[in-house]
Structure formats: structure tokens, C-alpha cells
Amino acid sequence: MASASSDTPAVQAIQATKMFLDGAVIAYRNLNLEIRAQEILCIVGPSGCGKTTLLRSIAGLTDLSSGQLLVHGKPVKGPPDGVAMVFQHFGLLPWKTVYDNGAFGLRMNGADEATVKERVSRYLDLVGLRGFDKSFPHQLSGGMQQRVGLVRALAMNPSILLMDEPFAALDAQTRETLQEELLALMQRPEERKAMVFITHSIDEALLLADRIAIMTARPGKIDEILTSPFGWPRDLDGVQRNPQFAEMRAYIRSKLKAPTDPSKFKPATETA
Amino acid sequence: MMAVPAIDTGRSVGDNAALAEEQADRVKAATAAERKRTQRRWLKALIRVVSLFVVLGIWEIGGGQLDQSLFSTPSKIIVAAVGMIASGELWQFLAPSLLVMFYGFSIAVVVGIVLGLLLARYWVIDTATGFYITFLYSTPMVALIPLIVIWAGFDTAAKTIILFLFAFFPITINTYQGVKNVSPELIEVGRAFRCSEAALWRHVVLPAALPFVVTGLRLALGRGLIGMVTADLYTAISGIGYLIVRTASTYQMDKMFVPIVTLGLLGVFLSWLLRLVEIKVAPWTRTDTRD
Image (cartoon, rainbow over all chains, first blue to last red; front, side):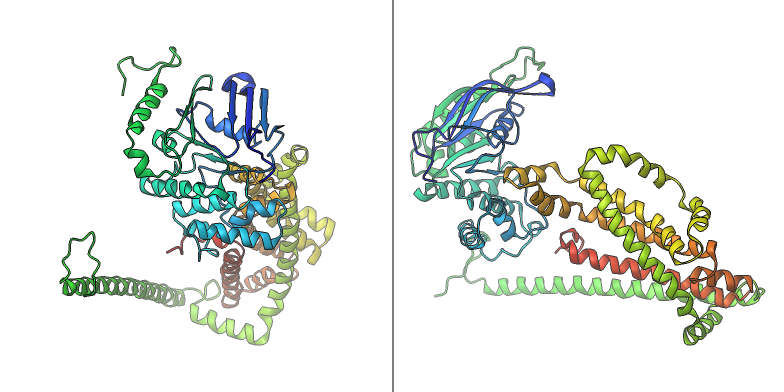
């Protein structure tokens, strides 16, 4: 949306802390992060590092324990305007058709039916679901279900798209196809938006990201932010053939494996 | 020359004959599988018919040997049924019971669903009244019948109350469970897309709870039928249960079996009706017919 000018960061976390169970579990602590308008930021990290909690905080689904979290410069209190989310578990409503699932976000935000029809049809076409309007989610494959999840979020024309490991539940081939489709979509100037993409796949992050934030666990914090050397336009083959791909991949792997907590009881011999 | 797609099979262009053969094989396999399924269906139907004949045959022959004031045979029951249907006797006793069933079940559905939803939505109501419901659900309702007879008499009103009490609890409890079991993930989806609370209930919670509610209705139907007959037996002035009491007490065994069989058929019919309703209102629960 035009209101999100490129100099206001899309998301800003300042000393943000989230704890669970009266402080017994720390999801992330004193975390600082800035996500620029129209950039694709991938957050990679081991499971349990708090990356999904961070995304849920940005989505306004959970409160901070302390610190500040701003979306479009405004503190987050409940799900903010202009933000849409795609879930790892797809989150489609089984009782609604593909079309009605795609329209769900728009309708819940008061869009009129003409707009709904125009936007939902457009994105169903774009993700290759034309003709499936009246199907129910259980009649679709996992990849197609997540395409509906994508339509639901994109149809709202959000300025920030939150992706919570959206392709993690899919098989390897489907995952690559969807990664490429998403990348091709983001290549269109009219579709560019800030995207926060949570993943634990380094390859996925390298392909999609403009910047890659490496998050470490206990307590979760952003360890380092790398800028992608692969410019636009890019695709899977091009990125993977680039010599810097292997180099960055190895680097991120070593970063994620580095012991962050000596008390972690792991056999000292285990390196793989 | 036409290009024949032979990308990943390694077939040469001249392999049209092989392709046709493969297609023919596929058709053959499909036909064979279909034939096998049809055979199995017919076989099952046949086994059921044979079973029915054997059981009824044993009953007919064996039952004929026994004292006919204590037992009856299928042929006599059929004759009695035709007579009772033709004379309107069966309907005369069935109609008041069906009316009680209709009143009691309708009230139980409305009150049960509304109360179940309220309990699930407001923790104060749940805390204040939940334990009564658990207590009453655990109490055999038959124990309350003498009390209800004293309060409400022997007529339709008393029977409706009895039927309501039998049918109401499973509906309430299943509705409550249905709401409590809505996937937290779907609730979060609703919240993430900024549903109002009303919209969240309408688009997420209620549809998700619907299969539970329908299960509650099915349980309630079974219990309702028990309630209906029990009410007739205890109050014993009208209804299909009374028809059983009256024919039994005068040793008209053939006539006594007619209302019993009718009740069985009624239960099967109502369950089937409910299944139709379920398919209509919750088509996504039909995973068994998925292809």
C-alpha cells in the first residue's frame, strides 16, 4: 500500500523480549531487528530458537513481555493493519471452498464482494488454481492447499507478508516449485512487499532472501544479518550455480551449529 | 511426422503398438477390479438374504413348536402387522408416541445446543452450572420418572418432559465438547485475519463444532427412543409402549411383536435421516466417499 513509504521500516523490534510460563521459558530476549519496506527477510534458526514466536508477535497474536515492537511505526496491539500471514499448517477452513477460503481475509476486513471477486480470482489464476474455486481443501494436494493459503494472504494486498515455515510440511519437489513460484511472484514490481519468511532450510533462505537473519537459541536473538549477493531477478538454478551459494551455505551452517549454550547436554563427539 | 511424447519412458517413436497394448492392459485391469467389486457386493447381499431366511426359518419352525401364548412365529407376526396396519390400530398407538418424540426431541435440540454453547463460551456459567449437568447426566433418568408423573401427570406433557430429559444431556455435552475441541490453529487463523468475535463463531467455531453436535444428536436419538418407550411403560395409558404392555398382558404374542419391530425400524429410519442431514450440513466430514 502507498502509505508504507520506503523510509519507515515495515517492522522494528527494539529490545523486544518474550517469555512464557511466568518467565520460565524465554522465547527471545532483548532482540533488535529492522525489516525494511519491500525487502524479503528470511529468519533461519534451529527449532526452538523462538523464530515462530517472533513472527506471531509481529502478527499481533501474542504480547511482548518487555521492549517494543513497531509495525509501520506503530506499536503492535493485536493484529495490525496491512499484515497477512501464511501458516505452516495451511490453516484452511475445511468447510469453505477454495474460493471462500481465499476470500476469507478480505471479507473479515470488510471488503465488498466486487473487490473480493476481482482480487481472489486474480490470485487464484496467478497460483494456478483456476477452475478449483468450488473444490474443498480436502480434495487438494498439500501444495495446492498452501497455494490457497497464499491466495488468502495476497488477496488482502498486505504491505507485510508473514510466512511461518509455509513450505515445511510439503515434499521436496512441491517445496521447490512453490519457492520458485513465490519468487517469480515477488519479482513483479506490483507485488513487491515486505516479507518475513521463517524457515530452517538454509537453501530456502538463500534462494528467497534479500537479507538473511541468523537466529540462535537460548535465549533467542538475532546473531547476524547477511545481505544476499544474488540480485534480482534470480531463480533456483542461477542461485545454486553461483559459487557464493556454497560458501554462504557453509557459513550459515557453521553459525547455526556453533554451541550457544555449553550446558546443553550433547555428546561432545557429535559434530554431524 | 507427428511427435509422440516418449520423454521419460525411453520408448522410441515407433512404439505406438506398445502404447496401445499398455492402454488395453490398463482398461483390462480396471474392468477386472470393477467386476470384482460388483461380485463382492452381490455376494454380501446374498449372504444377508440367506442369513435372514435361515434365522426366520429356524424361528418359524422352532417357534411353532412352543406354546403360542408365550411365543410367536414370523408368519403370524406378519399377518398381525397387516391386520394392525389395516385397522389403524398400530397408527393409533404410534401417533401419540411420535408426537411426544417430536416435542421432546425438538426442545432438547434447541435447549441442548444453546446451553452447550453458553457453557463453552462463558466460563462463569460453566463453573456455576457445569457440575449439575455432570451430576444429572450420571443419574439414570428412569429414577426421575415417578417424580415427573406426580408433577405432570400421565399425559403428553409428562412424557415430553421424560423424553426431553433423556435426549437433552448428550446434545449439551457434545456441543460443549465440540466448541472446546476446535483446533487452536484455526482460531489463530481467524484472529490473524482480524475476525470479530461474532465472525469467529460463525465462520470457525460453529462449523468446527458441528460434527460433534451431530454425534450428540445421534446419541440423543437413541436415548430419546428409550425415553419414549420407558415413558409409555411407566405411565401406560397411551403410546406404542402401552401397546406392548397391553398385548403382552393379554398374551397376544403375535401382536406384541409388531410394535417392537416397528420401534426397531423407527430407530434405523431416524438414524438414516440424521445421516442425510449431516451430509447436507457438513459435507466436509464425508471422508469415506472421497475418491
